[in-house]
Length: 211
Image (cartoon, rainbow, N blue to C red):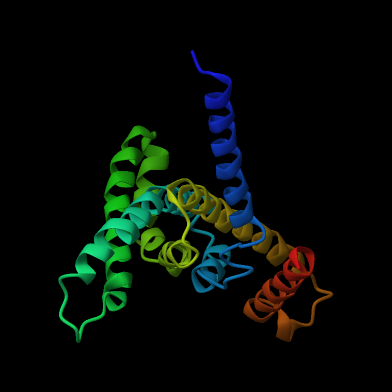
């Protein structure tokens, strides 16, 4: 039976996890505040053959799986390598490669987990999995967590929130694309120009809200 102090610790950890997840969805959104994954997002919302969930489900799962691996690499692997590397090779130069390996390991786990889904979901999600992994939104999130010195719980919450935040950005931009297709919008601004302007305006609005 949990004591009062243990229950408080669990609730505090859960609250911290949710706080960093919500922070990543809104205040630190990978698209609107960091401009990560914008090129793929633009292609996604204009490609009728790819459904939003087919791409964003792997993104969310890879972000969630790679976050603890990135923390482990930052806290254990990189310091150990720093003691063994020659002086002309700084450990910071290997950090992107190490984090890319973390994302690849998470992709392998997600590939297996997608096998639990029905074939109608599993096949299209697996087709999008490599693109969902090799995106700057995943690598950028790992680098950001390391730069901010997040602990394991914070990194995991921030990773989950980053994936959900990317889905949130896709849905918002996709809805904006539909509305910007109106005849009231000048023809020269329709399509990619209006989408980029729309993302820029949303980013400025987000900055105004969070300060």
